[in-house]
Amino acid sequence: MEFVTKQVDVAAYAAGEGSEDPNLTEFRAYSAAFLKQVIRDQVKKELYLVPDDLKEEMASLYAELYYQYCNGNTMTWSGVRTTRAYRLWERVYPDGEYTARIAQMIEDVRTEQHTWSYDFGK
Image (cartoon, rainbow, N blue to C red; front, top):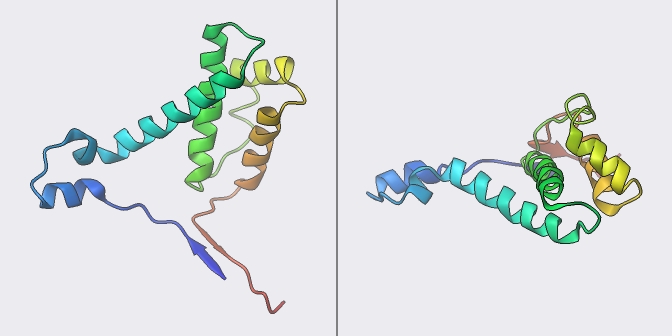
């Protein structure tokens, strides 16, 4: 079994079709911002114990990590553990679902995951 990720060049397609829609011509930036906003909004609804400004900070960290994870990009703890947002996750929700997911996402992509394969015969 093999799993491979590829980015579709929506901007090139849009240009070829004569589209001037910035959501298409700048699709890479648009899609990243859109996904992160959706994730931020979902996470903020689950945060009850913190004020709104801290919710935004915590949700933004989660959204960025989720985006990198979904793209199969390498992540390490070094850049995450020192952030105020992560320290808030640890302090406010130490045993929470999102805190656990952050840890799992980072552990899962210690190396890039754009190509993955498994031999069932082994």
